[in-house]
Image 1 (cartoon, rainbow, N blue to C red):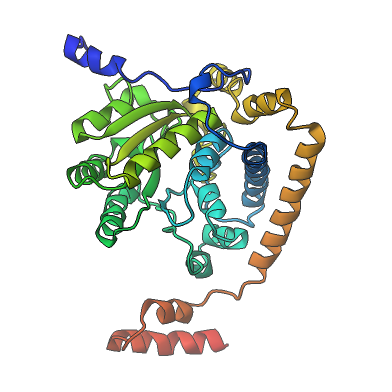
Image 2: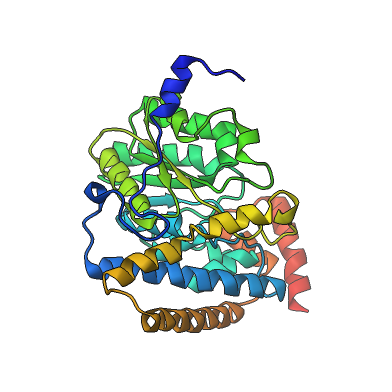
Length: 363
């Protein structure tokens, strides 16, 4: 398809924002965020912790001890860096891969495991933790985010609603509807697309004729930016700026994070070797977010092999304890689901069903 000069001019505006290159060297000194040494180390800690968690979750899934799971290795920078830029009173509306963000926002780890198993306690979010449950329907969280952001604006809260989807989610109708609504009402919303290039199995180039996902912000009249999603400092800086734009009344933002998931789309039978090459995998692993940030911190004398080993052991201990706590949760019953679904008078037909299941469960 031959592109017009006007379209080419638009696309040229969306150059990838980057602070650290693949070797961990600063290439954009003016954009370096103001973070303390302890904050930098905490970001690294969370990425390493998440990588170990991911490895363990995959193993548990294969053992039949965990339910639905979507691997995250390779996307740690886009997840951890963006959540780190938020305030605890901001709202997160995640997709089903975005468990690390809601864990660091306050959801206990054992509840994350229970959610994966389909246990209702996994969805009983603690008081004061501002998250929605991970959305299974692709892109549905985007329109919901516009609604939450509208509520924040009406209540006069200086907070934002932030949501995550993948490049596949950006091909959904909800993606355009949510952004359009947020733009029309100038809402404090941040829409993050973690472009890991293949959605479930379709290359991003076959999903859209647009050179970037970020440029789709133009149609909604909102800010758009493409970011190196393997660079945690760039992710943090872009998210922080988008958050400030939202709370200052300057409207919503669309951030496209260029990233890569090393594993399958989910553990439910996906085989990425059918649509990805080993050469592509090797190329993206050279951009690994943890390796890149490790080099940056080591150059600053802020990280060592001993530091990383401590994080790895802590992650393993925490995961073991969380799984044990999840295992000790009471077995889920149909009558439990009836109790939490209805707080008032139950319909007549449901009363009959309750009686049936009470007898069955008492045996």
